[in-house]
Image (tube, rainbow, N blue to C red; front, side):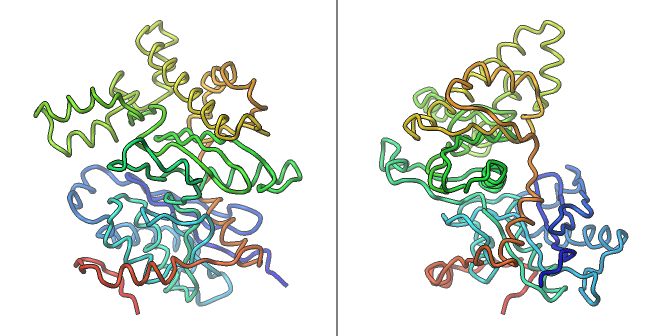
Length: 385
């Protein structure tokens, strides 16, 4: 008989914060967050994200102990599993994955890029080992279920790459299906995740068959989305910017920030209310681009769409939701799930495994073979047998 009070520790490391919590099958029992200042993070500039392991783990451990949780799992109040946000891994099927050597090695090598989300699996493994339980990741950002025709970009020199907000997107799709009394696999959905990055995706047969990558699609709070290619080539060849500056221009200082100097949608709306014409024009352009991408994903589904789901932090904006409805509600009914409840999504993935509804996956023998011949990099604190 399953224990309804079983606890799972979930961890979601971000660029400037670490969010974590303790969940039972009933939902959140306790949630915490630790903010990381620019001054503190400066010591890690230019280093591997995994070098922040103990810097992040120490304050987490202290916060959990203050809240009364046994991080070593020596009594009945311990954790039955630990889950972390999946990082920039190789292309993977959706699902819940056991954190093993292959996953940690991929994150250590960071061949797909450095990001704080790469810490999720190793933080989970560190706390799981202390508690004597398994560590998992759920629906990492590199979930790739694209249909083959979605992979060609127009040039073999620049193939499309599937990266997006799979964790929250998949969780919202499953919740909507459950409330409809249907299976996720039976629905055809367009899901619009609107956070610091925007991922608009098409879902059919329980798979995310296409979505815009972070370098495509609409602009958001600080990302440019798709840019005119020839204009971008001219900028790159001008000599005015180095590679790091160009990368920052596209990921971190684009979108709302590039036009208005703020990443805060609330501030943008306050400026609009005060008659700021530029703020209004930029907001309307962002809505327009999001709507165009949703229309494109409806076309991927050949017009047969059961629902459009709006989610992410920007979905709290009534004005944004209202304007999007004007553009796309004719496609299908719209349901709004504001926020990015990724901690809950991590917990749900683990409980599906613990309850036998899903089998935990591994990166695969091909992944282990692939990483075994790669050069080693120093600095990983946690050892692996």
